[in-house]
Image (cartoon, rainbow over all chains, first blue to last red; front, side):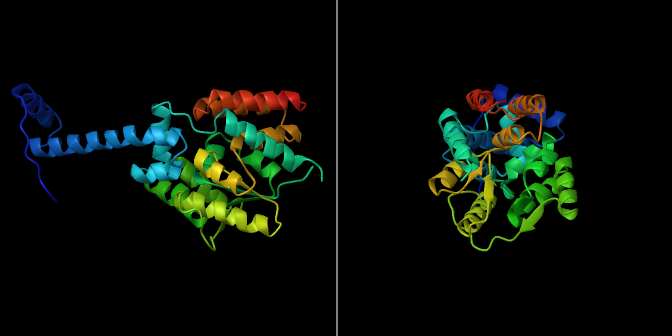
Length: 104
Length: 172
């Protein structure tokens, strides 16, 4: 484990203190939680576009975000991220579907 | 029409058919519904740990042998997730042996891999379409479930439109 040192403006420090009291946490624990939550959000922001483009799969996304598939489906729903093929891939899929069902 | 005997589901597709309550439609369409041990790990064990009720439903279906679990013999497609790679590899292995089998996935990347390697693949919505065209479900059931999937899982509108269009042309 490592540590970081940082400076905050008075008003941020005050807000941190107030929220720490409200959540019954010490200020360090709350600061750590906020940094981790923020980093996770950044990770989501970085990876969601790659998922939407089909560059990473849904399982790869879940693993990278340290989420179960169930949790990820909820995250995608909340973020209104579409799951599934675009028009081109759907047309291709329908063509293969038709070929498969065609009597031989 | 050729009947697809074995449908192999990845995690997302399996969860969808449970959530949308279309498992019975899949049962009418396919002789076997199969997953791999990694898909069971994702959808049952990890889900139960976090208290997802769908995980229990899947577990019960495995116990009742409505869903079969197989061990992946050899895994390719290492640029996918473990479960996706297992299901795709198993579908490919059986397809090469001449067994009628399908890889069911919603995932763009996994589907692309399947198509590039000539492995039969389709999404859950196309399974519904197949059920409707084969008169396993009514037109009304098909459209209701298609829209339900579209809303619950944010399927791209352009995909829904393409599927509806195909259904209308092919005698929906």
